[in-house]
Image (cartoon, rainbow, N blue to C red):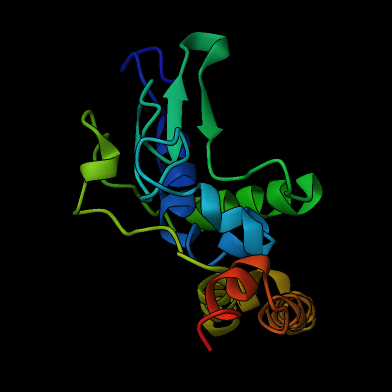
Length: 177
């Protein structure tokens, strides 16, 4: 909190800039299962775009409070998240932003579900895994061994899901084929 500005300090801006820059690359740590991605749809109170705003429940990062209560609410993780990994990703992204003096775009005041100018969150576990696997910044922060471990685990999870014949498939195709 910057008393003179009555808003976020430079440190806050850089931390938020890191979150904004690395969110999709570290998204696997916020949405670790196949089912995680079903909640990211418009008007669901789960963010669909990497954006931030003051007291805006449609953005990925909701900034609220003032003085000692000033804080960032990360709205990306769901109930299925490993909180230690989610916190590690948030802190790593924020510290990366501070170290590289990154800044986020201006606060968004509208409906972020309709905010086409912002990057969409990954639509599936596979997309999130690919982004993490290709992220030089994630590898710089966590190291190849850590990233390779979580990428391999998520790829196995995704394959196990694809190998299943669902009730929907049975109901849809049993009588037709």
